[in-house]
Each structure stands twice: as structure tokens, then as C-alpha cells.
Length: 440
Ligand SMILES: *Cc1c(COP(=O)(O)O)cnc(C)c1O
Image (tube, rainbow, N blue to C red; front, top):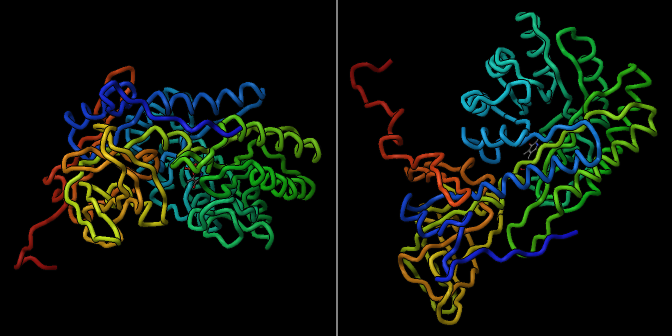
């Protein structure tokens, strides 16, 4: 079921097209670096996930993990597509509120939600807290008592399944900072406590086994483990889950080596496993929630850079530098993430050379790629790095006081700025001048 590796669309001049708009036109309008999203790709992915659930005929929610890429327009797009929304901070919740997202479809994640964040989320009336630990549960119980409200919760548990992925982005194992451990009895105690607190309505369980996953087996295994415990909790506490949330982590194509599954393949496997396990444990089939982040937005995003300086070390490496780097895409520096890139402004050229793509940040590790074949480049060429739609903008920083790039949405041959480029004034907005006589 692997997808065919797609060639990027080019116009007759060989220039890259993004959502039927010439990438060069976008750079002329908005400058570089620039994040450009082909919105129809996001809609297609959202619809594929939902359609698979519809076809399976099960109750479901597809929650967009907004940490992958959060801005008001993106949250509005998620709403338009009938998605639910995962937030992991007061800031992401605020973004959802500003976007007019229905709060009852917001799920709040995170391993250290502050009392303030919990309070704000209760006032907002969000749909569900994914409770990560006892400290959070106590705060939530207190706040619901003080405010005389009820919170719907899922318990995040770690089923001890290692997803087939890079260690740094694997979170489902037992040695994880996230969630209640199943084997040691932590999760049993959590269920008991949750059922005990009158302000907490325990909907069910949640797990997230990793990221950039290319197989369904990890999900099936995790569900089997969840149900061992759900079966036990049914027997001991009479608890019947209304919701089972199997998280996100569905893999995408960063390079031609990646062969992601179709969204439907994951959904089918998850639905089938949950149905089988429910039947085996004599429980009704719960509502199934999933949480794709990168699978919805990753491939839809392209970062456009202008190529500037070069440094060739004969027989060693040929560096070319772009006008962004780790500040707009930290993933290569953070965990050796690999990407694919091409020139956007032309395809023709002499024989290919192999280039190392350097960012402009003052760190030797600010490298986007080490061996990218390209036609011989000149300053002013536009480099398009593909599949940067997830964890690019959302992890961007102002290191070296570089303003963060703007985000443009492209759809139906129209383009629309959805996040403005930061200005120098933005960079110093929160700075206060040194005042010699008012030190406190
Ligand atoms: C990060 C995260 C996701 C989304 O992961 P992707 O790899 O972007 O799909 C979903 N659920 C939870 C709990 C997460 O932490």
C-alpha cells in the first residue's frame, strides 16, 4: 500500500509550482525564507482520515495535533474540515480561541500543565483533558471542585510499545516522561483515583506510541496491551471506556526513501483492532480518536530560501548557504532529520554537483543537508525544501535575532498571507531599556 513517489509539479519554464502558483511568484511577493502551504493537500489528508472512519462505520474524532503547525488560519482550516484539535499549552489553546474553534472539540495534552492553564481550559469549556500524571489529576480535581464544574478526561498511559522510528521522537516506551506506567500499577491507581473524584468524568485511555511510523503493527500491539488493562479495570472497577485514543505519529514522505502508508490503512487497522479487542473483552466498541499532526500538514509545506554565499573545500565539501536554517527548521540539527530539496526557479543546468546546505545561524551544526545533488547553483537561486509543513514554523526561533519567516497559504490558484514576517521591531517588542536608577 505504499504511495508512488510523486514528482513535484513544474511549469513550462521548469519552475516549481505550489498549489498551481509559481514558487518564484510567491518569493517575489513575500520574500524569503518563506513557508508555503498547498492547502488542498491538507484538506485531502484530513478527508482521507475521516473517510476511512466513515467507511468503517464507527464513532470517531480526528484531532489535529496543532503543535505540528499552529496559527489562527490553520486552526480555522482544521475547523472547516471538521477536525478536533489537540493543544499542549495555554498558548495553543489561546490560538484556538482566537480562531473561533469550538471548545468542546479541544483536547488538552501535556506532561506539566500549570494550574493556570488548567483553570483557563476549564473556563473555556474544552472537551477533554488528557491527564498525564497524579499531580495534574489533583490540580484538576481541586479546580473542578472550586469551580463546580466537571472535566472529561482520558488517562494517558504508556503501553511499552516502541514505534519504529528515531529514538528521540519515540514516546510510547516504559522509560518515557509521558503518561502513567501500566506495568508498575501506576495506571491502575490512576483509574481508581479518577473514578473517585466526583469532578472528573473518566472517558477512557490515550496512548501515543511515537512519530514517523510506517507500519500498523505498533498500533495493533498497543491496542492489545491497552485492552489487557481495560479488561482488568472492567472486572475490578466496572469501568467501561467510552473513548480509546490511539494517538498520532503517522509517517510522511520527507525523502524518496520514505514510503508512508495511506491514512486509511492506519484507520482500518486501528478500528479493526479496537473492535476485536472490545468483542474479546465483552465491552461495547468505544469512540475511537486519533491525533495526526505531521500527516496532515507535513507534506503540504515547502520552505523557500534564497541561495547566497558558497564555500568549496576541494575534495572535502561544497557548502552553499541559504537565508534561513535552524531558526526556521531545527529538525536536522536537533535529531538529524533528513529532507529533500530542489531548485525552485529552474531545473536546467550543467551536470549535477553535490552540495551541503548551510543555514545562516552562527553554529557549525546549523546545516540543513549534507549531500544534495543540484545543478550548479548561483547566488539568487531559490532552494525549495520539501515536507517542512510540520515542526518547522512551530519550532522556529529568533536565534541570532533572525525574524521568523511568514507563512503563505496557496489554494485554487490564489495565495494568502496567514502569518506575517516578523519585523525588527517585533524582535525588540518585549525588550526594556536598562534603567540605572530603578533597579529593584
Ligand atoms: C506529537 C503528538 C501527536 C502528533 O504526532 P505526529 O507525529 O505529528 O503525528 C499526537 N499525539 C500526541 C499526544 C503527541 O504528543
